[in-house]
Length: 163
Image (cartoon, rainbow, N blue to C red; front, side):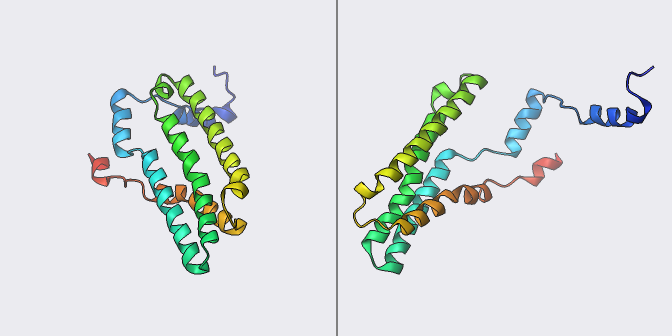
């Protein structure tokens, strides 16, 4: 006799079918090959290029160097912490085991946020003729590079799926 009532019998079978099953080493390797990771350095490089482009566009459209410096500084407020974060995550200590990697992720994320906030607080002292709107535009556009990097990730090789 089943412990589960007949009403829920179908749900139990469906649950067992959907239950988590660990992958074998070969299956995990095949999954890694099908979905290659995106390098954090590629994302940081894209962010730096976009920050430069935004600063250049601010200079071209406003004709003011203060707007260009402000937009560039907004981009730097994203890029500099991202470099620290990527460096921290790629260090040898953050991949010792899962617990260390998880803890390292949160520590480096906290450092990234603190550096970003610190850079924004220091902006009035560091950027002559600060244009807050240009700095905000540089910051937001540079932050959105994460989505661009997601769209530019290596494509799934459909020929490998068939084999």
